[in-house]
Length: 476
Image (cartoon, rainbow, N blue to C red; front, side):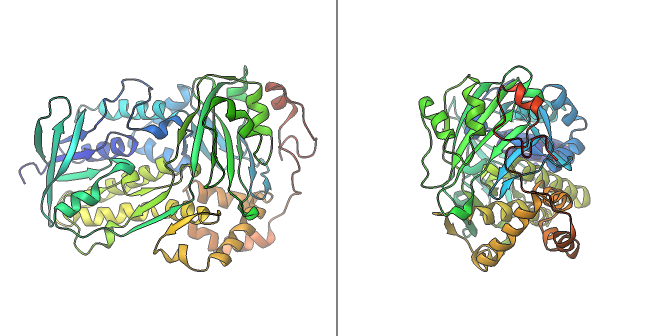
């Protein structure tokens, strides 16, 4: 190994840039290897097809990013990103009914993925300690089963291969990672893998929001009810940084998906409530339908390998990919970056660093993994290939408890606060089994069930809608 103070990150997306920034805090120089040409503005790129659908950055992830890149959250909001307070600024039809709009406990940033990636990339690369090799294909890892010493890459324009040596290589190449192939070539056994695939698919269009609605109208989320034992259909209307709405319709296996512009509004009318359809019926579409069918939950377990090679880490979707509907991917990548930063601060790059850091990174993605996977298990036609006992045993009892929490959290403010902390990854999921929470479930006040979307007259006027019912209007 001739470059111990050089770090290499495979992939220049969200997870890759955060990992590169962390490495640059501890190593002399960092190289990011990326297949695409990274845009110099908020534009889509081929290697990030999911970027055309809705994304949220939960408050837990935003706080981590602000620690790594001070002031970034404020810069995003100043540039137009919407800060949505949960649940004051969100109107949600959950599986168990309409959510009361309690005072905000946590928040999420809503903006387009290209805008967010660009802002983070711009800050990360401004340090001058990170080099990006664009249009470069990763051929394989160099080294052996004991230690990875670098990567072999090929210039995609000239076809010339080259070996880059490093003390630490981080695979952040996403769902398309070839980690299994690379490890096999080094003589290592396959990694254990769990998959939970509800067959989720997404269709998205961007609309021009009515004047004032992008900033003054709440985000909207209409979810499916898994208890109906039929394929689920979902719809969201999320404000974006440029005065538009991004509308994503999604479904689980067997429900079908609108793939043509003319089918988009009719499909929205098949949701459990017509609010999404009513909103877009009066708005001007700005794009055609963009479709994605990659939404399975998939997790690798490198920490279980008896002998994990020094000098190698895996993060982001290459390690654990979630159903995007829960919005945990970006915050999970931020948690992984924080775990890596902590380990490098503690011990630097040396013997045992990669194994310790990988364990910490894997622990950081465990809560979002089990939340997404255990929720998708509830939908019909879900395909499960998992050894995680939390997914394979006691499913009925867990579902009953989950349903009880869901029913109470939409009507009980203190219960909702704890659930929101957990969903935002601010509190561990184990909090839902704590004596404190179980006591709240028994004792917290329970408000009446809402029978209509909790929208105020002023909000309805912004989008030119008339209330179907006054019950519940105005929030709580």
